[in-house]
Amino acid sequence: MNQLLRRQLEVRLAFLHCLEDRSRSDELVYAMTTRPPFERVSRLFTHLAHLADIVGVSAPRTSRHTVITGPRQKDMAAALQLSTSTVENAIRTLRYHGVVEARYRKFLVHDIEALRQFAAGA
Image 1 (cartoon, helix red, strand yellow):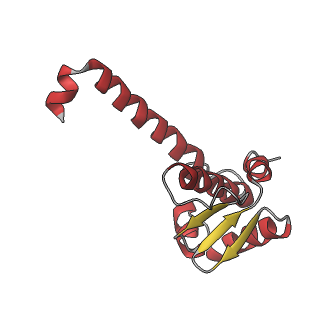
Image 2 (spheres, rainbow, N blue to C red; image 1 turned 90 degrees about the horizontal axis):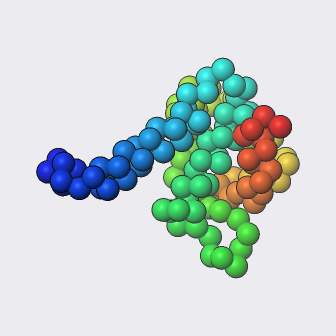
């Protein structure tokens, strides 16, 4: 890998851009400890929905929602340095607004735009 990066300037630049993009997206999700918990959970859902659409198994295109599989509320709480009950309350609020639906080992995101607004603190 090092030899390839030394010889190919374009590959090196693409690799650095990829690392920078990943670092920025991680900061937007995980390094916002001063933001309100509801906003942080919304940011995490937005991030996971984006990843599910890019590399994950998204719902068939006949549906209008994104499927996030895998994370438990406990995992989300650990990732965001929040208590599990705080994450549960945030998810309850998102469910109340019809933005997400919680199922066994997966979440369905019904309204990505509303989720982005919550993530932005609106």
